[in-house]
Length: 159
Ligand SMILES: [Fe+2]
Image (cartoon, rainbow, N blue to C red; front, side, top):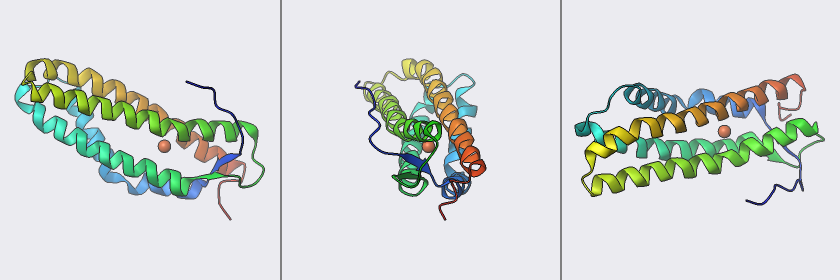
């Protein structure tokens, strides 16, 4: 991976970013349900259903990230504190990494289904999902911190 070169300033529109998170209840419910199921033993008979739900969640997450990037993040707005700009740039670039990680899990799970290795899948799926879930929650929590900081420094209102 090459290092990030800062050629522009990135910041957030805190109000839009917050609203995108608040209205996307379907995604959060789906995540909660998957988390609940993955925190206990998974029956091989439930694997197909779980992988279908994960695949739907991946599409919801792709839309969520696309909305955040379209309305929540800005290039070249006003002068922004370098720390905020750095955090914003990092968080925005995490979307792609998270999406690729999730796509990988879905692809590998679908391959196991295709090979009828449901017992293996049942053991593998929970820990894999929970690790991804933790990374996503960590991203969301740092993005929420950025929203609050943007409000506090008065750069996030977009007016
Ligand atoms: Fe995000």
